[in-house]
Image (tube, rainbow, N blue to C red):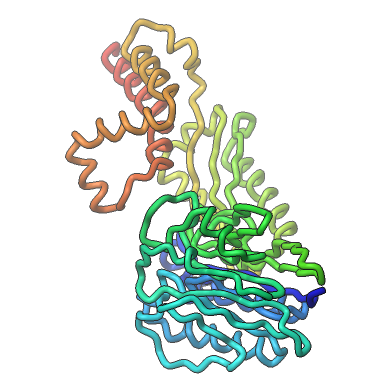
Length: 425
């Protein structure tokens, strides 16, 4: 019979990285957003103290070494010393953003913290009340790319009471790549009872026997990282049973809200609707929120919301109401998906340019995703302005491509309709 104990599994802290998408000049909230990543790790340590865990496991990307952030390293060390005072061990496997070979200041860590080597896999005993409760296996990256299958080098030692693997990896569903690729067979063959993985920012349980878990990042840093963020609190029973529980630790929450404006009469009514939603979510979440708003439906507000300057003015009015609030709700993006009151279904049946356009759109939009995106990329490759877009904004992802296509449905139809009306005049 083994020793009962608890541990926390977290990854991808990215200390020192500010929360993205907040415009320049928003000084009222700049400090909160700048320190959100560090605050989320402090929340993890608070949880460790409250639950009296034996260890905190960190599966890579503690910070971004390329930023040369001494403040991030000092914040990290401060929290480790706070954990050390309670006798909590910390095990760190560095990843592609903070490899051992990258620049770092000589900031001392407490003796209760162990940083895994980059040249070989190590096994370190986790001692609880004088007994070895588990062996913790791990390996760090030596550089910001690691194309080798590091998981294949993990092997449970004979007699290990409980085995935990800590690894920063792109995972078994991504094929070959530069971030310690692996297969399910390699992970299973290692004989671990629990795989504490990192690198994937979306919380994912790959398998339950044994557990292979990505906790996701503990703080949303980018627009696609919506919803609760946190870590896993893992309870290990005396017979090796494993019970993981997700715990929220984010200091700032990112959400996406959708409003149907069909029955909303004017902008004042719209501001009231958004304000009510804001109050509801503020009370439910209990922490600052970054909200992306999408407007759908049709009606009198379509003419307003289709105008970028009008949407910017609405965002300014909404955000002015949040100035100096501790639990602020900042609306960082307003997206128009509304439709004019035109009967587009009937328009599709007409033998004119607009009808031809809409029918062509329907045919393209109805294709399987891979075929649709391939055709769009072929068409875009012939446009010189697309190459300029890539230089300015980087990769055109599949999501952005589909968003652009959806927007083109009504943008193109409206343009053709207005052009036909102009010619008729």
